[in-house]
Amino acid sequence: MKMKIREIVLHRLHMPLQMRFETSFGVESDRDVILVEAISEDGLIGWGESVALKRPLYNEETTDTVFAILSRELIPLVLENEFSHPAHFTSISEHIRGNRMAKSAIEACLWDIWAQEQSLPLARAIGGHKSVVDVGVSLSIQPLESLLLEVRRYVEEGYRRIKLKIKPGWDERPIAFVREAFPDVQLMADANSAYKHADISHLANLEKYNLMMIEQPFLEDAWESHQELQELTSTPICLDESIRTLDDATRAIRMKACKIINVKLGRIGGIQPALEITNIARESGIALWCGGMFETGIGRAFNIAIATLEGFTLPGDTAASSRYWKPDIIEPEVMVEKGHIHVPSRPGRGYEVNLEKVARYQQRQWHFRH
Ligand code: OSB
Ligand code: MG
Figure 1 (tube, rainbow, N blue to C red):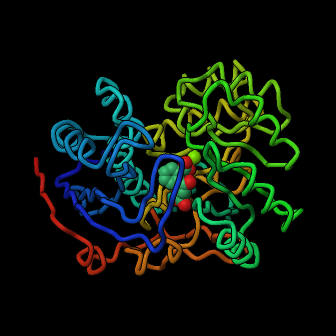
Figure 2 (figure 1 turned 135 degrees about the horizontal axis):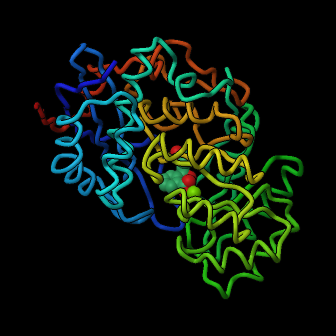
């Protein structure tokens, strides 16, 4: 059976975050989200979300570039074609270079519809078998006193690991402080590309705090710096921004530039590329986990599905809906109990999109038909 999409609606939402979130690249307090809604000839509805930030501070894409590439390139491509499998989209969109967050947002709709057609939960449709996934939480750069309160709160709620955001001049102090108060907590640090080659020995010295990993210390193409640091320290290096393609993952593994990969569907262009990266990571003994980009419930549904794959052995960044949104736009909202999320068993993405809640945040929508 072939999937044919008869209409696509883009929704642009402004959503205030429940927290002020500071990273090495700046402060986020809201999101400018693009949701993609695709309606098939059979009347099935698939949803996807663009995880691009408003400004190109994490990677080069932005909400505006995603909108432009979706409306000018990817939506016409999807409306003109028929799909026997969502992977077909990956191959026919290969000539559109980069713009992976845009691709991922529309590819998600095809997976959602495809899973519904087969009456399979998305997690099963992509080959995942877990019924629960483990999650941790990513904490903002903030004063030590409030950081400690937040760590305590999430540890007590059962989150499986704590991620601290660090930057040059704000690394050893928060790490030492949290480690002293919580000697046994699973702790890691994420630098979002903020360090330079000259910082290698400083970063290697963080080894004494027994971190699960240091995530993306250097710029995305600083392969040699990551390799040198990984050679020098027993703390695993995890790559986030650096891994944009299967070739990037292959290179990182071959160079021994990391021991762990953070998989984000938007950053790598969707589920199909994620499945390919998962395969080579598993063959090479590289551990995986699913990162986050302050997704709405729609993006979170896909994160949960991908985290059910074998190979995703470490807790992800998919915290509960309520940490980010009041309200979230899905039903039920994502709940975390004892650091677990129960994987939905309904066909497709497994969470209903609440259109009334979408409307509360929506600024504009655009319709595209064949
Ligand atoms: O590097 O993992 C990151 C948020 C936005 C951009 C990049 C990152 C993050 C987070 C927060 O760490 C993850 C989340 O809670 O969704
Ligand atoms: Mg990161």
